[in-house]
Image 1: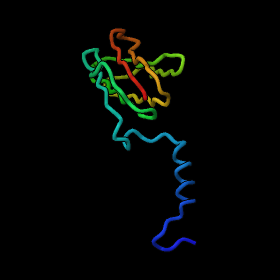
Image 2 (image 1 turned 120 degrees about the vertical axis):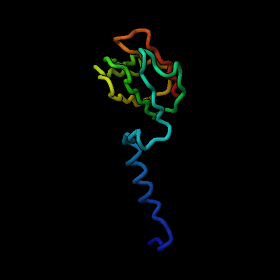
Image 3 (image 1 turned 45 degrees about the vertical axis):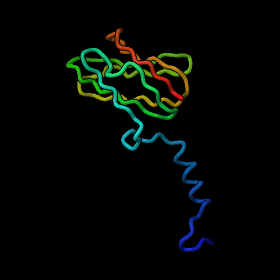
Length: 114
């Protein structure tokens, strides 16, 4: 039995393992960069993140965007992204990826996941 000041490491480990399998909300992550979509461009051209980080893409244009990633290791497709909407992409694999807009082909973001 643990003292009043002590912890129960077995319970902490069980909770840690349980939470490790869940996706954490980007609002809780200090490392979730916000990428703006404005004037048919992403606000940055490259970004380096850690495996498990989420990127948020906010459409600040008055028209649709369509964010996607297509690679052998990772795929994502947002579908139509209306003005004002935010799309989140969880990068759960290490590697180099290109985020694009299916509507505006010049929109490209190089993502390096470590």
